[in-house]
Image (cartoon, rainbow, N blue to C red):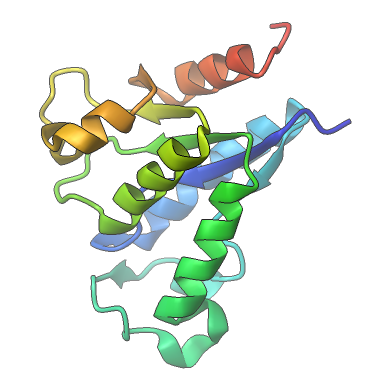
Length: 158
């Protein structure tokens, strides 16, 4: 029985795609086992694994409709809109992620709770922008703790 839909947010541009795939894969397995549906913005993009992803929005447009700026925006917007809660991993990011910032704006507009993995000391660039800082809901420093927080918010019995 589906307990809710979770969107997995976090930087993709200016990252090693392997890292972006890895934490989302780990989270998806645990969340599925807990009965959640998971929406991953990297689904259908396995050819990005192992690549460094820059911030050039035209870098991969020849790979298909979900690689175009419009395809990325449309799918991520609709995924956030239909989610019950968003799990975002900002840990270790060095640059402000414009895409993740937009996702936080959507969660705020749609009143969707956010559970975030982020450094506790305020050093993360996302914590330095007042609007993003305010849009971050529950703060955690580890994936396991974030999933426990998310499950508790969603009424889990753990």
